[in-house]
Length: 340
Image 1 (cartoon, rainbow, N blue to C red):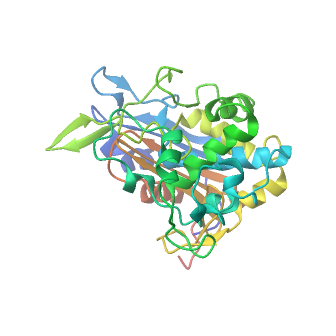
Image 2: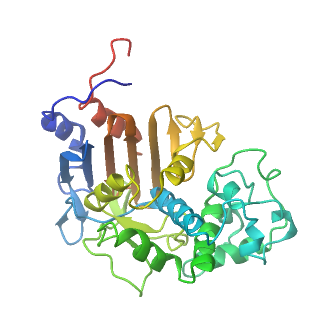
Image 3: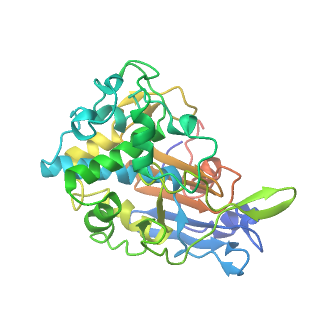
């Protein structure tokens, strides 16, 4: 895949690709950015079925694992500040972790090479309410084992990113959600973006998640793990993510060295379409991307920095996963190479 971006005359073709999201069904918001300009910016379907509220470019979706790039950026910002090092042992910041975590560093957490046990696998079956990042730490404090020697292999880890959120709090002196808002979201003008905490903030223009069950759409907005922030708790819109995308091209937030760390292969992976993982970003050739999947939401952001092209698809439904859809949308704005 490669070549030059074509003129933005493919809106009808994109509408055809998005037909399944249109109408009185859980919807999606789609953004195509080239060289800082929005070539396509629109919503499809509904953000709230019960209230009949349409999805728009301002609709806020739960990003799920697309959140991880913000968690990684927060750690890199603190490293720039000199408040921590990515090569710090994790137990320097979270000393309650068991001896099996002795060799784990922040770098291992960022690149999914820690070998940590998945907190979802050790949650009590009868958990009441929702887990928070601190609850993840308590679960892991009782697991004196890892899947492999830290740094020796890759295993995608939500546990690691929940711990990173707690480390952001410990190193900054403010809670994770506040740090993100004060150091990333507000400075970039992302005023509607929140690491959402029930009872603390209110998500404006909020989309609610749905799942197709027995031929009907049913609201499935939250699960017991939906309140864990570091691995997937951010709500944002395509309009706010356009500001985030723009900031990843210059030094207004992250230095060139920090961006290089985020966007360079930290480890090889066995996952399809993910030859390498950076810090909060999957890497496939010239493409930087990440998907987000949680109960009732499926999202993806794909960036081709060399072409200054970005495609974002946020949706409030459990299926389908939109990575292939985003690639198909991108194809309408790119001149394919003859050999493709």
